[in-house]
Amino acid sequence: MLSKPPEELPALLFVDDEKKICRHFERLFSSRFRILIAHDGLEAMDLFREHHDDIGLIMTDQRMPNESGTEFLHKAAALKPSVKRILSTAYANVESAIEAVNSGGIYRYITKPWEVSELEVTLLRAMELYLVETERESLRSQTSSNVEALAAIERVHSLAALSVFKESSLRNVAAATGVLIDLGQINYDDFNQNQQWKDAYEKHRKFLNLAHAALPDNLADSPPLDPNQLIPVSELIDLTSQHLPELTVAPPKGASHPLPGPLENLGSLFINLTNSLIGLSDKPSKAVLRETSRGLELKLPAAPVRQAFQAIFNSTQTSIQKSQACLEVLKHLLKWHHHGGTLEVTNDQDQQSLCLLAGYSKPSAQNDPWQNLALDLVANKSFWQRQL
Image 1 (cartoon, rainbow, N blue to C red):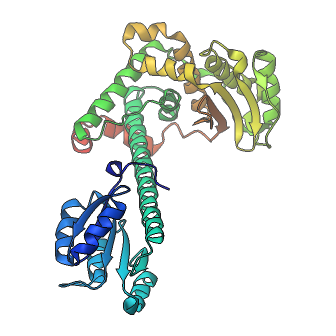
Image 2 (cartoon, rainbow, N blue to C red):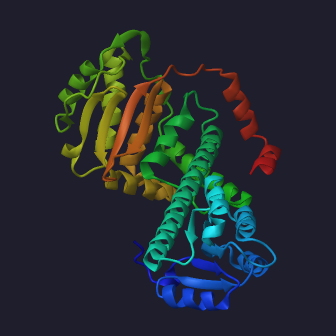
């Protein structure tokens, strides 16, 4: 049952044309609820319009002057469908109350004279239901808003990456640099106006420009992968553990699709990327590698990785050059994605670990027409004036 004091709960609107009953209701329940009183449907509607954001529960008598209780509840529901509605009725009007319940118009009906203990339980349960549904809707809206914001951030970052690396021969740059956003859990909850999204784009672009200037020019020159020469993931894990003995190898959780070889080329890309990632932590032995049905999973302590990338994302030219560990990660991410590698970042359930799921997707063509179109748009100032 409800444990909050009345002043912390939504209001309860009680409607009855008999003032004696209204006073009696207040005496019974004012210690449990914050009560608003109206004496007919018209007065109740005026009160509800004024306070509908604050009202979570309505209890009204059925027989009143001007309009019936069911008519008022129908109007109230049109204004605020989430409000819980209880109808109080004499035995002679039970049939109309049952009809209202069956049609979904009200939460419960209570017959007069009231059984006080029964009425109290009904009121408490109705208010609890309103609070639970309101919280659930708030979480759903927040989740939806976060997903939309994340999608917008990724689009802005992708355009910034295309702008900075447009002269590079590297493929899949936006996907590679986007992993940094996931690793650092960088977000823009406050960016919801057009000018702010311009600021977000410029911030991403500034960071990527600084990083690009500090990286070597020959990242695309590493040996390619051949999708026709498939390597079991278990062989890649064995090779990785030989080169990185501090890494913990866990038992497999299913079998994943093989990755393109040859093993020497694949191993070089993955081992260098893994070594750069575990290098961000002062406890490399806490890194865990295993095969899963969805791909090759690398689990890392979350805190040092987030701190490292959040720091360099707000860095200057001087500080980013000093962040060699983060630059190493970016360098090997670019090489991994250039050859068709993928990397999905998720939080573990305890929020203390990051799970990186490595896989493969055939790299885009060097002259991908869609990417060329995106590059043209990036360079078009009028496009930015319209879109951001």
